[in-house]
Structure formats: C-alpha cells, structure tokens
Image (cartoon, rainbow, N blue to C red; front, side, top):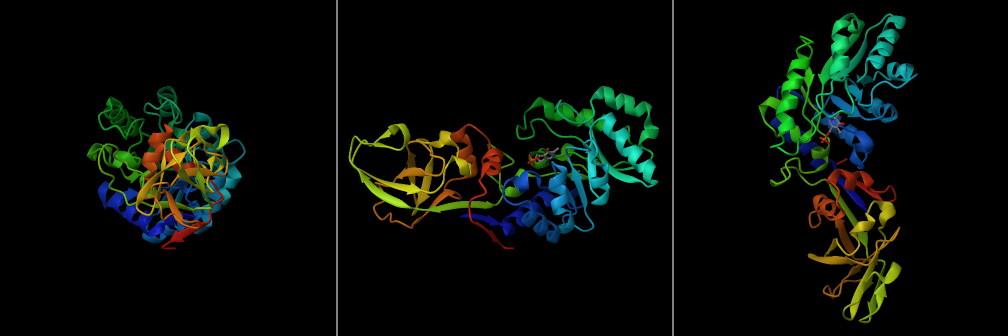
Length: 356
Ligand SMILES: *Cc1c(COP(=O)(O)O)cnc(C)c1O
C-alpha cells in the first residue's frame, strides 16, 4: 500500500513558497505523474493551497490535469512539438520554447489565428540539454519581432548542480541568466528548482519551480531534510518460513542462511520499482526494527530476514519506504537518487491519499 500524504505536500509547498519569498510566485512541478505519486491528486491539492503555476514535461501530462487548474498557468517543459499547436491552444497550455524553430512555429500559429499566444522562453545557461543556446539567443535578439505576437510569461533557465551549493556552475549560471534575461526587459524570470530555492537570494526570481522537495526529497543533501515526508510504502508479510543453516533463499541462492533463519516474503519486487540491486543491501522496517532484505529481489517479491523479530506474523505490515527507511537511503543503496526511486514506484500498489 502506497500512502501519499497530501497535507505534507501542501505543507512542503508553503515552506518552499515562504522560503522563496512570500511576494514571489512558487510553482508546482508535476512531471512524471507528480514524481510517481499522482499528478491529479497533487494538482488539485496545490491549487487549493493557492498555487497558480504548474509545469509538466509532456503535453499529454498537461492536458490531463488542465481541467483541475482554473486561472493557472500550465507550462510544458518539453516545449512545442511538431503539429502540437492546436492541442496547446485548445487547452490553454504554454510551451517552454527552447529553439528558434519552436518560436517561429508558435509565432506563426499566433499570427494565423490573429491572437496572442502564451509561452515561456527557455534559455540554456550551461546544461547543454534544452533551451536556447547562446548562438540561438543571439539570433533571436536580432529578430526580436518574432516575439511580437507572443505573450512571454517568463524567461526561464534550469540549474545544473543546485543540490551542490559549492558547485561553481551555480554562480556562473546566475550570471549568464541575468545577462540573458536583461535582453527581455520587463519580462518576469523563473530560475530555481527545489534546491535552488535554498541557494540564496541570487537564485530567487519571480517564479521558482520546485518539484522533488514537494514530494519530500531533501533539497539540501548533507543537511537535515527540511521537508515533511510524503510517501510511505508498506507491504504485508505473505509467507513465513524457517530456513535451516546452509540453505539458500531465492534465485541463484544468492543468500545462504548462516544460521537457522526465519524468512518473510513480501509482495514487492523490481517490477514495482524496488530496484534489483537492493537485494542483500536494503532493509525493511518491522515493529520498530530493521530487517535485512536477503537474496535476490524478484520481479514481484522480496525476502527478508526476520530471525531477530520473533513476533513477526503473516499479515504484519512492513515499511518498505517511510520514516524508518527514507527514500534517500534506498537511493544511496541502489546507486541512484531519490527522484529515480520515487518515479520508479510501480502502479500496482493500492494507493491511499491522506488529506484528500
Ligand atoms: C524537473 C525540473 C524542475 C524541478 O526540479 P526539482 O529538482 O525536482 O525541484 C524545474 N525545472 C525544470 C526545467 C525541470 O526539468
């Protein structure tokens, strides 16, 4: 059972908003189905809290949540794809334009309809991934009339290493962005992601775009997590067995019982986003204790050693992710980040939204 605490998401959004500055806007990033936790439920709740700016990655993600977000800006970070103009216009969605080609196509759509169309202008300040390159920005400046039929709501950029406060790229990007944004006088700016909000006043802007921190991921790795925990994944013990010393458990008998052991089987596996590499590495919480995951992670099952938890019984709830086993810990053990753990969580769990 995946429990998602919408009250905690709302509290996290308010904390980020206050930290960014109460007279500045703070958006909600809902890409990848709200970082795996459910974009629809999160969109509704953030809107009720007063959030009025939202981002998804894909157009179809935005179309799904558009009806839940009246009087709000909804922006697609991937920008305008070929032939998508009609869908953007129909649903009043703003693309984050990141190439001259997109700008030309969106401006042509505006002229053809005789109306102004909303957009964000995405400027690449060092990521070398999306957004206008310095060369394209130069070309755009020479053809400023291209933007005439568009309402540029924000110029935006994205930080390369915001979660590493000492990274030299942060200051470089702040400088490059300030210079680039100055080419669009009077246009509002959008800069920080979750971690960027904690980097200091240089990274504040008219609109911050936090994602991960809303969902409880620590935006200040190395320091205590200021965010409230949001997701709790629990599973019941399906089976219990006594395994004599010297016998193997699970595929390939990767784990051999070093002593007479009590093994519990839980219905969670790598198909649910419990990464296979976590076998023989992670733990699961049970009755205030941590029980090691032993043997290989199967597609739909894990086995845990409950020898030192003599009260363990079939039907007992174990905590796979939660206060006892933070997402960050699983991420470290799996050699990834908390974002990937959350967005990998499978769709098979029964989901319960608290505070809905
Ligand atoms: C994902 C993303 C965000 C949110 O980043 P977090 O680190 O999750 O806060 C903001 N802006 C852009 C362009 C993104 O792709």
